[in-house]
View (cartoon, helix red, strand yellow):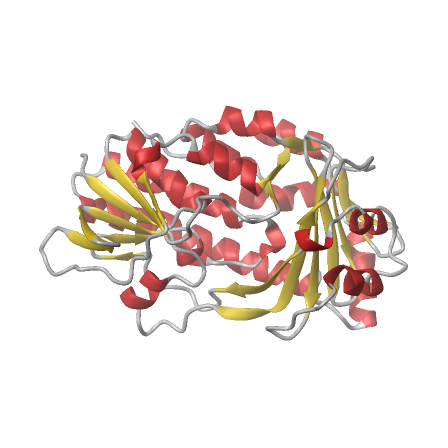
Length: 385
């Protein structure tokens, strides 16, 4: 089965969906409202499920070559004591790959380059969909209307299309935390590939990149909409006394490089990822908190599963029903687990609760920590035909 598809949203998930559809013989257009197709995020960790999805899409090798494996690291307390160690070698033995760290902009470029340039329409907003014709969807894209057999709504956590398709859904809600992040201006001699540090109502973490630079992030329990005239100065005060390399990471960052975002999630699960011939994908379908590092990986799973369903089923309707049945339970379960991880991690603020959590983490065997990661990362992509 082939046809014409329009993907609304040119992020990593939307581009991955376009690659998957192209690989099974569909004619695809990606419509992105931003004037430039480039991901403005800082860095990302990819677990085995995300890497396997990229393999199925034909770009896994290029991503691995550009990424840095995460063999060493774990979770620490602000004074530097280890709470839990990450065994990247054990993960590699179990899954065939360690977790890897890569700049979002690099990942976006590698995925984007797998598509013909003429399939990408930038600086174009899709205000609505015309679903009046049986078996077709009209997609207004600037001065023209694209006619499609299938539309993929990959337009992010604030998805306009989700709001149109499911007007009774409450939409995304503030998760109670904000994240500030940046990539260092130059390489650093980091002792580990990846770390998280949990304090009272705050988290600081870093991901090392292949070129020696690093992404760091600070997650803070805060009211929505709060911004700071001097973000780096605020962070230096907030994390004063926390262990190295946190001060070094902040010192290696240009002030203008710091990004600040409130974290939103779909706390109320959607009743379906499908409406007629429209499939929701990625954050538009299941925006989750970043506590498990699974947001992009779940979007990549969506992309491969959608393409595989369209090859296996005799009609678009049955393929979308299959996509919904396979993706909604898993991605919504991961979203719930991410929310719970945040409550037990950065969101804890009472000193007694933090002390109890830290004690529990220190006595948990490392194999149980590895097993917890495997619960979400051990996913095998369907065959694309």
